[in-house]
Length: 619
Ligand SMILES: *[C@@H]1O[C@H](CO)[C@@H](O)[C@H](O)[C@H]1NC(C)=O
Ligand SMILES: *[C@@H]1O[C@H](CO)[C@@H](O)[C@H](O)[C@H]1NC(C)=O
Ligand SMILES: *[C@@H]1O[C@H](CO)[C@@H](O)[C@H](O)[C@H]1NC(C)=O
Ligand SMILES: *[C@@H]1O[C@H](CO)[C@@H](O)[C@H](O)[C@H]1NC(C)=O
Ligand SMILES: *[C@@H]1O[C@H](CO)[C@@H](O)[C@H](O)[C@H]1NC(C)=O
Ligand SMILES: *[C@@H]1O[C@H](CO)[C@@H](O)[C@H](O)[C@H]1NC(C)=O
Ligand SMILES: *[C@@H]1O[C@H](CO)[C@@H](O)[C@H](O)[C@H]1NC(C)=O
Image 1 (cartoon, helix red, strand yellow):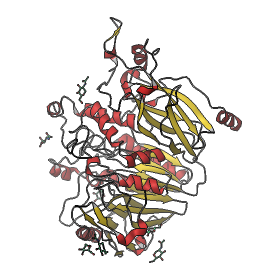
Image 2 (cartoon, helix red, strand yellow; image 1 turned 120 degrees about the vertical axis):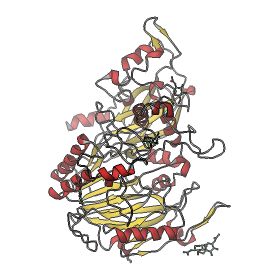
Image 3 (tube, protein in one colour; image 1 turned 180 degrees about the vertical axis):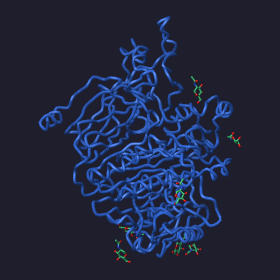
Image 4 (tube, helix red, strand yellow; image 1 turned 90 degrees about the horizontal axis):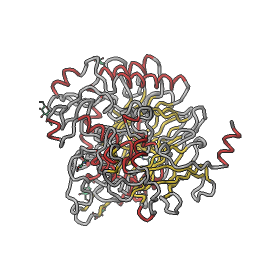
């Protein structure tokens, strides 16, 4: 086996261009073509056209390159090679290729764009002197000219460079960098991630993506959802970050266009170019407060056809999901289950990264604004699930199997804050784990009853930072001073650019103070800064470093180190003293807050953060 692997590494295999090479033609089902894109029909509709090759001058790599979902021997690489930046207007769904070719008259109904041949190369070095893979694939308007290829035959936990070319020409994409995962039984000394959520384009600049990429201190990027937002904001030609399309999105064209616009942000593009991403979605990739059958602003009734321009709830969800898979450099691990994004990525003996979908897959009804009382009454209903039975059982099995295989850590890439956040006199939220307490209890019971250790929940969604021990109130004793009784920890992160707590930092910190006092397991909360956190995982400990962007009103490279936390393996709680006793903002249980004074002069667009000069990152 070994010599065969070496041989194939030494002699790159040149494959003829084909539709099969581009994974997006298989979406959403490889085994049932009629459920997805009908490749034989595309081929038929393009027959006779292939002779006319594209002039490379007609084509552009419109949105850089991206990679994701690393396995020990392969990674997904992505680009878009198109005759136009415009996204494809066809709202084709099932068998939607039909209009291009009329089988009765044997004529083309409208001009069909030729298939575009694209070459991809993966190498060990940036100059591509040592090629590992050299292959070809097609793309067409049917998949919005996206190219998604699985680069195979790679070595574990190795950095690679990749690029795309218009076939038989020297028109080349930017060079991307990526990294495979460690093999499942490798002893790995360290793996690190930057963790993001809630990147709202019109709300602010994506400085958080750029800052981590420029520091270049991590192996992979995790995104916990709300990568795009579905609503419209701003006036085009007037506001630099007005949305495209201008309004709320519903059609396939709409979702493609919105994803494409986000990908024009240079800091997001840089992050995609430098790292393999492991993203999952939350609600806004489809629509606000979604669940299995609807959204807060669109009921699953005939009404939806009027409100959404003829697009039903289900159709809208399908459009969003299809555009997402076209545009994101990730795998569809079960092509017969086309809504599935939940998956597991093993990283050596060090960790399992269990990626959940607590939102769109099979979630019981959520708080939609007008039904809060109802949700409050049913929050303890035993049948309620954030994930649906299929995924829930898979999730528990992943936790057990990961523990049984001896992986040191279990990272749960989840959307919603898991820890209970209670406010005196206020009703618990119905759109978080608190609205699905049976599902939450089953998760805790599974961890406690099976003595599964070293579980770290990751969360986004809330636009604030929350760091907690993982505890089961009223069921298992817990000592907030020592952490005794906790079954793991939770690191929930703030938004890249979505709004946090309104008001000045001092008042935000006071609110944090009340929250930290009222919730025993909540050790740190912070709601003023936009940002992200880094996770540095080793066999001995997990270290979380939180970073804040002083402002996202401009594109800028500044960031502040907000807080650092450590979890030692085997302890199942945050290391005391939590945060080493001092954080920069928010409120730390039993600790100090330094509180940097950042002032922004909105007239000049300059700001004063002279106190922490050494923490600036330069472009
Ligand atoms: C697809 O949707 C767009 C709106 O986003 C609309 O303008 C266009 O006419 C639709 N195309 C078809 C073929 O229905
Ligand atoms: C959905 O239905 C509820 C209950 O009838 C109603 O209160 C709400 O306004 C509806 N939402 C939309 C967006 O039509
Ligand atoms: C979940 O556990 C809590 C104790 O933390 C308990 O009060 C509640 O009744 C349980 N709910 C369900 C549905 O199991
Ligand atoms: C967090 O750790 C980094 C070094 O890893 C240090 O530079 C920074 O000051 C720390 N931040 C806080 C708030 O303690
Ligand atoms: C914790 O803080 C002390 C100063 O209070 C510092 O000397 C030490 O290096 C810090 N430890 C870590 C791990 O950041
Ligand atoms: C922060 O700086 C502003 C302007 O320089 C000043 O008015 C304010 O008092 C300062 N706040 C704190 C908490 O130091
Ligand atoms: C910036 O802050 C320093 C003190 O921290 C102060 O002396 C200076 O006037 C401030 N500048 C502006 C432009 O606010």
